[in-house]
Length: 166
Ligand code: ADP
Image (cartoon, rainbow, N blue to C red; front, side):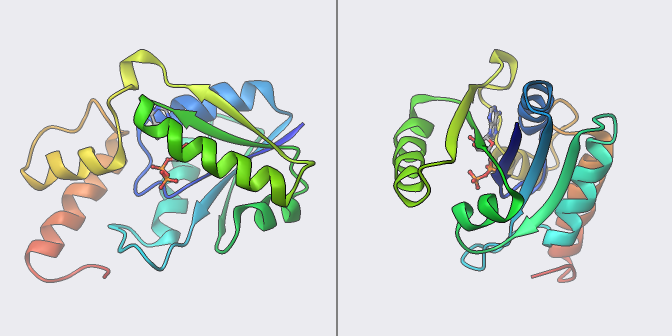
């Protein structure tokens, strides 16, 4: 089974890594798809997000990191994927995820969406809250790998002085 796990990963958190660990144990091959979304202004460029993911997933031999833009089903088709993996945290994730899974299933009936429910210790965790805590110089070591935490603090400091990616 070849699975695709898409997301923004801006940046990768322990919640994402938990889904990657669990789904890579179920699939023969897992492709993590980093979305280039021009509608959002990310904290990190897609190249930076890929680098952080490559580093954080190097212990998993069947995990590959790729970037994509456009429709998820097109990317999943290109990858030859059987399954799309998504993580579910609270009920707030559910409505959007259900709608997306059903839409994708109409567009590509041969690719199913597989949901993994969050591990309880990461139920609250999102890239957005990590960035908010970091913006107030809070401790984010419980949420992201050390190198990612350093990169976030560095980028926020650059932003405050008017440097860094836009
Ligand atoms: P998106 O911008 O598509 O929401 P994210 O990078 O925020 O992308 O998340 C990608 C996927 O990982 C989504 O399916 C999301 O529900 C899941 N996810 C994010 N954080 C967690 C977490 N703490 N526990 C479980 N799943 C998570």
